[in-house]
Image 1 (cartoon, rainbow, N blue to C red):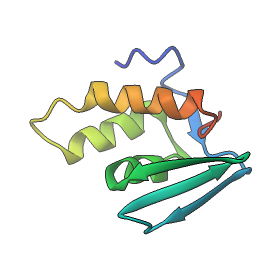
Image 2: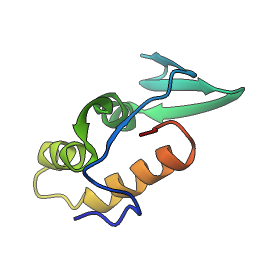
Image 3: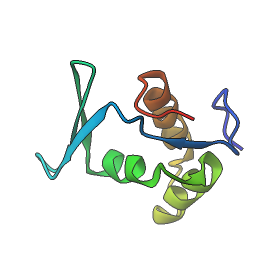
Image 4: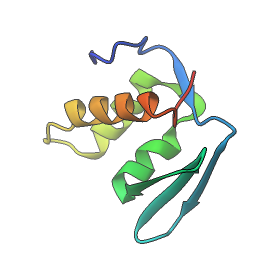
Length: 91
């Protein structure tokens, strides 16, 4: 299971102060409290899964299934931690 320093059974979502624009340069631009974050297509797909309907573990498993045979789990875990640290994902 992930080493995220968070409960993998928690449900994360984007806070209401996030303004995101998809389809820009093959990804997403997120504006939050005067800061801009750019996400590539894969990162955007991961972020979209955090709609409040799945646990962290379920999201990790869903993305892991999309890339069979590749060791993407540590990358996904790190990305989720970065999104949470940046305040782009909240409980």
